[in-house]
Length: 119
Length: 114
Image (cartoon, rainbow over all chains, first blue to last red; front, top):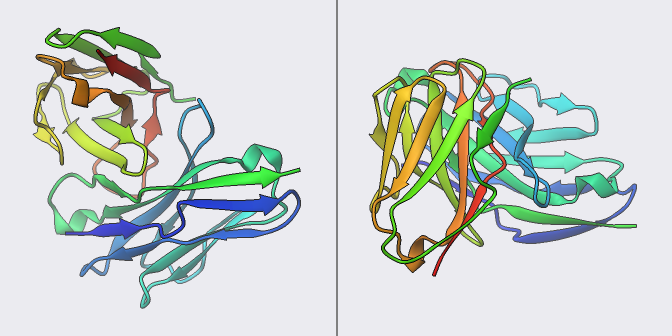
């Protein structure tokens, strides 16, 4: 079974600085999808960024980028120029590729990292 | 914009009560999910449904059941609420079974069982 580990329960960053959130996962499959979701306090969870395992190029969305190391099974999220609105719980998630069948591609979540942004 | 709505933001129920949590999505998504979120445990899947009247157990289905009579609506039922079911419940929906489609979440229902 696949597992997702976020080793940093809490992180803190100064406004305008850069922070990296760690995520590692365990799988024997070669095709899969990886996601970072953000859950602001008392607000809905939203997708930050996604990565297909077959793509070597790291995904980027504005100030958010990932460092995807397939061999190391690592998928870290870098937030550049941190803003107060970035304060949230961040969840890393894994989803199996359809080629492996099974449970319709359910997301497997890590336990989350709480990010605080200091003004 | 996709919208996933949940019937209540906060709910307080007594032990032994039957509890219904409702979720509605407006984008004709095939897949719908119910998660439970607890501090330090992340999100755990309770049940999911990939079509009307279809359901599959997730990781922690005990004490819960679900109903999906219409494509847009997915209900979570606590047959006899217990204090260990006090938690945040999140509903989500997603289109298709293939690809890296985004999963959209509702605002959550914070359930307290006393």
